[in-house]
Image (cartoon, rainbow, N blue to C red; front, side, top):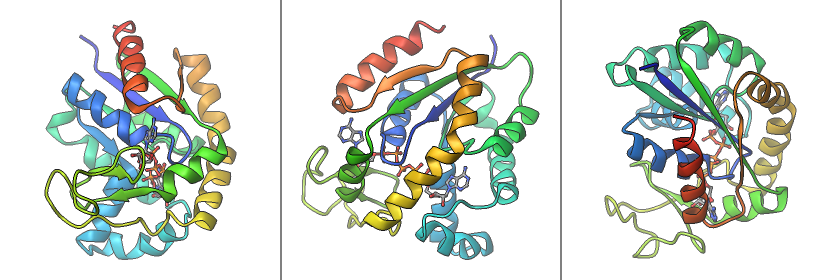
Length: 216
Ligand code: AP5
């Protein structure tokens, strides 16, 4: 059985994290989000975390070399043996080249692109609330049971520093600039699954699950 590697592409707020978490549970595969890995480093105040905090808050991309170290270390863990899901990585042509150098020819790559219009990106991210445990909510589309508190661990929810309108716009511009070659590659080399991200979380999930199962 080849190792299955799922790549989730999409602009900020398109629902990559929301959908990849659900698919990860179904397929019993770890979800590796470079954004989450970096925020974890910030939370534990590691040297790397301190170095990247300002960049993330300003919506700037972290260097490819730093991301390489982070991903290499994460992919060396045993739980990736049967495959894994990548959310938010690779982010540019250099990271794509880097990822390919870490994979085997026998690995099966399945790429997913979630599309949403720019206006929806702002709506989604300005209403997003997150918890340190990794859970994500939306004040309108996916509210927690108790306002401001995480359903999973009860901790206080907060707004990500990079979810301010002016920073969201910058992240969106950067995504558009860098994603062209990645999507072209995914379309040409693999069967790129394109998803309309404006539907409900449930609808997208069911559609995605069906289409991923057809890839088996
Ligand atoms: P990262 O954390 O990867 O941010 P992102 O790619 O901008 O994506 P988001 O996490 O904002 O959105 P998402 O698509 O996961 O949406 P979500 O499911 O949360 O990166 C953050 C930063 O880290 C970067 O800016 C950069 O600085 C750095 N970084 C990370 N990776 C890097 C890399 N590889 N190289 C260099 N730097 C890197 O959903 C959003 C909201 O919408 C939620 O509130 C959710 O509840 C809601 N929602 C989801 N789906 C729906 C739906 N269908 N209908 C209604 N609401 C929905």
